[in-house]
Length: 378
Image (cartoon, rainbow, N blue to C red):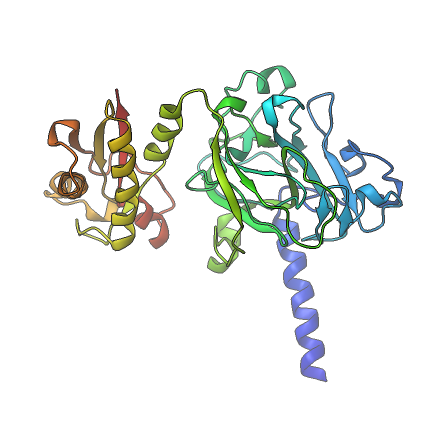
């Protein structure tokens, strides 16, 4: 009994210390849930707002309005990841018939220049939304983003899924998480889809079992447990990104809503990264699968040419560093050629360690730097 009690208090202390490190003052959207009577009431969650006239939604286990309760509500069913509340945002609507909504708050203190932070938000796709979407991210900024700035579609969120995948997780919350090296002075975060609607890739999904209401032709996501925490104040296992099992979705068909298929294919290629073991230029099996996807696109987009950029980490600094980065790019080129892609469509550049993707200096950070990236030329 004594042992169990000690463990209980240890867990409380650990959870409390993590909460104190979080620079998002109200990452769980706490607030007087019983006052929620309609949509667009994100302002009831202390510290949170929306930059547009149409506000994000707030859901609570204490809500007296069934449509904005938890777990059951107007868009499906979800249990809060943290506390009793969570938010909801519109990130896409068919033919752009409904405005998108965003979440915005102020950090408790500005980020420190050069310091590394673990930035994370948890999402769950609403059960009665018809489309899963990509391009959902979190932006950190020194100035508060206004609706006019957001509507120009020029904002580039620093925190997104590493492959900018469609976020299709339902039933339970799942994290989008990245480490971020601060420029210094960032004090505001904004969450949503900042990209032109025509450049958002969607997937139509079947309505899950257990629901009788029809789906709505939108992309809608529940958001919870938002955090910005200095990486050096966390254990290694407290900033694990894109881990954990996701339930598979029943996909009816892929629908490309861009007016140009080329634009989306270009994004797929340029978001692809191949990673390597230390001092090695040998392709992993996962890398070959990624290259097979690029082969398929190149066979369809015959005007595409690729610049293949090889990189090394800082530890690999030797006289042969440049040669190693070029060898990595060449390995990718030779694989594409072996699959029938013409050599005159492919060029390689060895970047050595001049363009680091991650400056943490950790083992995981160095692994991210040992990579090959692609640039599409037309």
